Length: 137
Image: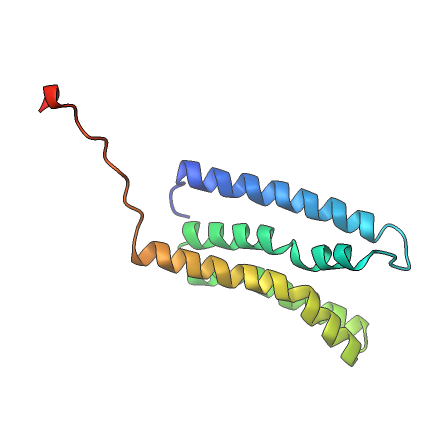
């Protein structure tokens, strides 16, 4: 692993943890009672909010991992969970549609993190230097 970029990596970890906890609490609240009786806005939030933790996780992996295969770990986890879900749903069309809806946000989070990482690698952020006072010149 590469050395820690203290401020930005710590901020990414905090956002990851807070957004993941919020998502898991919301998930437990929505699926606490079955059949699912959530209004459409809650279903939309449930299907899209996990973009944020996946974005943070993927960006951390891109910035810290030296091996290229580590960058693909979140997508491998999604593929394994999806395969298990589709096998349990007997590979039906409804299972494929649900899997597509559920995984669109995390995959989009991964792609956004890759774009941000590549843009940061191409053109690194330049820090502003403080102007030195005239008396020290």
